[in-house]
Image (cartoon, rainbow, N blue to C red; front, side, top):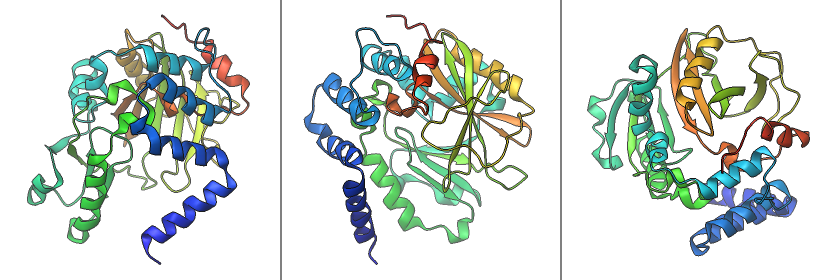
Length: 305
């Protein structure tokens, strides 16, 4: 069956079964026509959280994220979220040994010198989320599919999707990185630390990506926190990473001077590697289950207006 037919059928089913998804889909389609960031983000919040935010007196984690989204426009944030520039920024703070090697950066797909790339590599666009192509065998690499995906990503205005200011001025490019694989062959685990007022307060481990993603949240004593957000828990208990304390300290260094940020790492064969800095986890539009954890986590963070 043609790819577009399957995509259309999937969208129609979602629209019928989930009107909230339909509302979000239509809002994104209309995004270029909605000039007010405040209006757009409030409706996006409503469609995700099933209520409008209180931005005069924000109390929950998601409300505080939305307040920051609308009121903090620091130019340095652009460098911090650019997938190419963030590496140099991060290396200046925690060292180059924690940076996945870059193999090249190009303005377009046709500029990529594939002859210079190794047998395995990863291609990413620098300005959005999801523009990733993994090559595990260069001899069987599908150039046509890679070109189609990355060119679509280069055309994508990620800022318009969620009005996250750090992405507004990131130049769309393609970066090639060294392919990284853990020796157990089970796929890389993401360790994501939430830092409030410069201090790591909780983290989650992302497993089973991308087919059956699981998120498990922990406090800084590695106690499993009793809530879910976005994805269910892993099927079994997760072990505390050997390098947990070092990751925590590196997160603290990167979060210094920031009201809040999520700092992501990989622990690959005993070595910690930087993943990314995220200012707006789930863009501030994803409910916690149970919902009271939204306000509890919000209380861990003093919003500096």
